[in-house]
Length: 239
Image 1 (cartoon, one colour):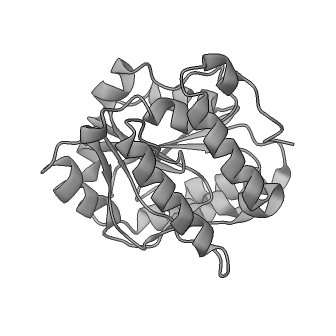
Image 2: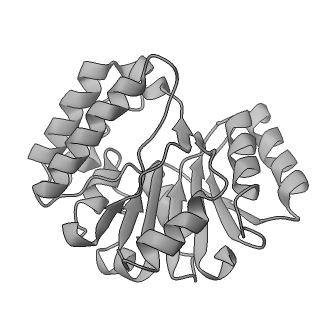
């Protein structure tokens, strides 16, 4: 059962119905019964608080939902990871939808149990007209791995819990690209991209900030990979 292998940590702030839909799809995963899901929440709007409360009622018989204090993603993930007692932890964003019901089981049976990797991520699907952006990112991801600094988007990261703590865990002082800052510390030979079309997310980040800005900041993140102070500024990402 996945509950003996995996804990899921989800940072959340004012995600509205997204968090409900995200948890609903987690409940449909094969062998998910009894799995601990930690919501590191900092919501302050009534709609989001309603959907989170509703999720605890509707899905509480399938998964074990814990709600703790959140914050910016790095702090929220760190807070959640401190409760993890399983060999692996999945960091999942509240707007990431697992549409393949066998996804987590398949990752365990291949990437984790067979290859014994330290970090697994997946490609993402998104809204019509925006998938090309993620396909460009796929190439950047492969290149960054070849250069020795794997890039796993924080929206879907399965870490070996032991390795996660060995490389320091999430740094709560990091306000930007904290996912790259952490995943880049993984041995490239222990990094795996699980091929699937079953992980969907919104294109809102590209719509809000613009594609060119997003790619520019990715390149700057790589250039500053050894500069801790770079990741401690939000670079207007959250405005």
